[in-house]
Image 1: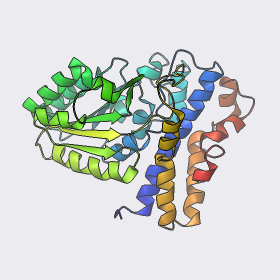
Image 2: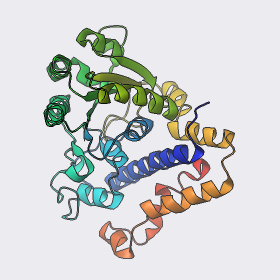
Image 3: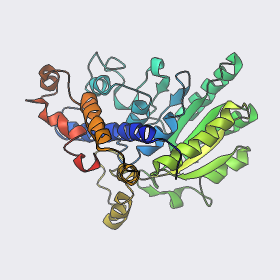
Image 4: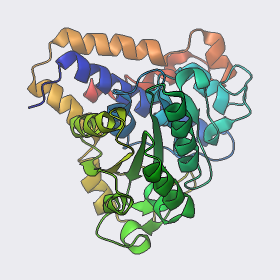
Length: 326
């Protein structure tokens, strides 16, 4: 059993719950026509950014992809400002001009999301080069999906990072599908992680739905980076519970497969772990209270701005919809 304290696991669980709640409400707002365009939800993948971000210092930098809300929230982004950004309001992180695929906040060390497949990898490598030359001791993290592995950016960034021994952690969130293409039909080789060996960097394949396994694996890889030994690679095997984007009906995968992966829900597994550890009931009460503070609007005016008649619509974010997890 992990030596992590119950408090540490509870805090990470809360972060995952906050991401799940945020994405759930984003889905509802899109369905209601309150948010326009498209969106790519990370429901089911929350353990990856939370387990990795637990090891990041304020000076460290992250670069995300099109499915990036969870990466941003795991760095400490405020849910209200993030909602404002998606709603196109000036009080959003990018004054409403970035939207769902171009989120950034330098104060949080988040260099930005990127709508171009694999487009963030060379950005992360460049950021790591800057950190190395300045001798800041900081690292950068590049999040990307399995579909990015077939892009030229992927190989160029990996090669340059290895040649120059850059402190960059490449994190592939392998959710088994590049849009509708199964990973085994789009990417050659026995695994994605093994490709890192061709670039002479250490790598590990993790169960991306196991929070503690992600935490411990990220700890090892990030220690390697901070030692000055060069880049490292994580393949986190996970699953998106929703489609590629809001219009995806998921006709390329079976309901049986989805049911199997729902049984591996990272939130349910982490909550079960806390119950096994006999987490005191007051901890659950604190989780609920903190969860509400993150997710409820500050005033009815906030709800009205979203077209809501009351704050009750916000409650499913962390309480009603996930009451069995608390």
